[in-house]
Image (cartoon, rainbow, N blue to C red):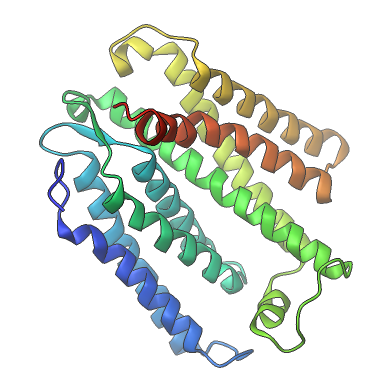
Length: 282
């Protein structure tokens, strides 16, 4: 596709992710990964991430300028989330999370081919302040998106343990659930994601507030995007304080994570979606 710098190679990351999903789907039900199989899958994920990352960079930072939209935002979020999973999977037994991370990445990489985004600024590509802000913001939202998906998975796992969800015995869903790490490990990984994601979100929000003129060429405007970003920031900081002071955990922590992430999604992806798809405005 040749819209604002896009080419037909935009479909390649989706094809690679789909191929990996098919390989994992053909694996015998309930079987344990051999070291060779696990290594090949890790290599395949790394290759897909590399191709996805190059395609994202070339389609966002184009010759015409900075091209962006809600579809590119979701694709970047998926890339960051899968990259973090890939890195963590070398140290933690979280191979059962591959399906979720790969499926999300496969779906999100299709979107920029359907919604090519808009030319936001012809000058931002060469602005180091903007590039730094954009990279930090992308990593922050990507990690917090992965944390939200992780929280949803913990909710399913918790309800299954309390027999509130019923799965067909010996089904793929039942085996997949049994392969998940214990809830304590899952919770530890969740807060690792939150600590790093929140630190980067803090840098993103306040760099945007303090350097709005340098970053975007206009003074700070207190709009709906800023309001939702600040609401999300206050919810996340309240969650982490409650975790530190009273040891907040379990379902209460999961609900708090999902509420904070909903506000964050409305601030970033939601605002672009409304402008591009609903209002049909650049």
